[in-house]
Image 1 (cartoon, one colour):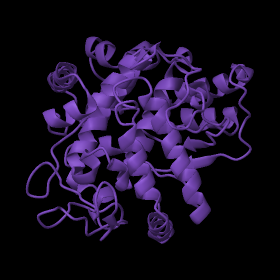
Image 2 (cartoon, rainbow, N blue to C red):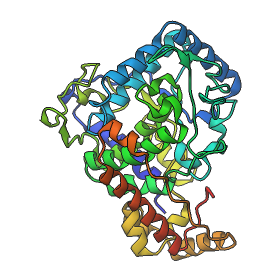
Image 3 (cartoon, rainbow, N blue to C red):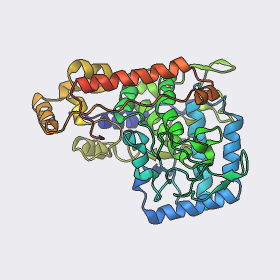
Image 4 (tube, rainbow, N blue to C red):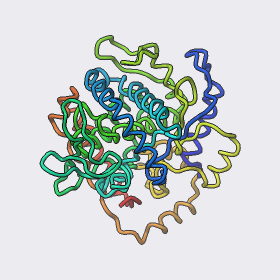
Length: 403
């Protein structure tokens, strides 16, 4: 079977060698940082991150990012600028943090894998980002920012208020939904719309407190969450050669968008951040490497040794052809490479697992949607599409490995 990972790796290497970078006048990075999922960072190294963040807070940088995000809130959400702006702000934070701790590389939080019981995630434990806040204000007392006070928009504690009651977070969007969205959407703006109204909003609201407000960068989780959304965007960019430089839709004030548009706050062109490994975008994701010898990476991928990410699981590929084509067209296109014996083995492997329906994602809060200027109807349409997918996969016998 040809895995999605191998498809993406081939596309990335092909794009890096064939695109004319003179179009954006970007130099290839001499050194590339590899961003890792937060749970892969050892505790000893995490302490260095903690020290760097404390110093950044003391120097006023968390206040600066929270204020900047708040002041530009309606410009960088609900339109195509969402992706380039957040790619740039996370890269800028990473660059700044490295002046405090040279070993700092921005982690990402792969929230989708925790969709069933987000509050039980190791990422949200005291060892990493911390859990629910305590007391009437929901003050964060655990994790890397335990006991923090903030200065914007007021002098108070850093807040975290889980949305499920009893210290729980309501279920959000699954890896299968994210994978389907990556494979199905062909327009950047439609892809952005689907992601912004699904996993993006669910994590912000699920954690609540500062994460559910305009000043969300007060919570370091903001940066990890948007690093993950950026990772998902990058995977969409490389799944199809036509996606790499695709930037469509309309801006709030200027009509149709362009790669020459300046990124809000930073002024760099949108085109300057489109391709990882060039210009200032000197980073990659461990789940989607952009460097190294192609033949060696291809060999690793074909042998099953490549780094895994949201690319689904074998049981997805064992779905009936109609369901596979509807939700996972890339897998469906490569179904010819899947022998019937392989499919039978997959079905046999999962046959002893009980069929469980994945939980439906929660409905985004109306006041939060209005704060962003989001369409309530569009947001609910995205959720209903996810619910329909949950039902269709269940009726097709899908056993989610994350349940």
